[in-house]
Length: 117
Image (cartoon, rainbow, N blue to C red):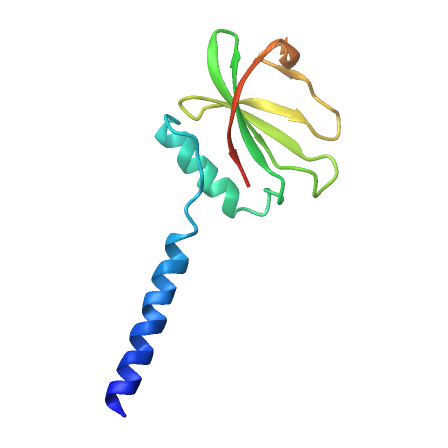
């Protein structure tokens, strides 16, 4: 009976390890470490819907990232951060803000999507 219990326990531990390793987030290569950490936190938070995403832009001569929570709530804001994870501002929300650092964010150039839930 001990051998059967050990085999069963080994199977379930192995299964748990396999399932845990499948949860790795698919974040674009070359993304700064602090941005990767923010994506992991964003994914775990209640602020990220099933269609949440993070996009990379060039804005005011810098690389910036938008954390778009998706469409699961009304009046949600997208946070804009620089490559050092400094918050530059928020887009959208109740007032529909479209400005970051005094400039309309439509002047930003989309580079790529670096993560999607």
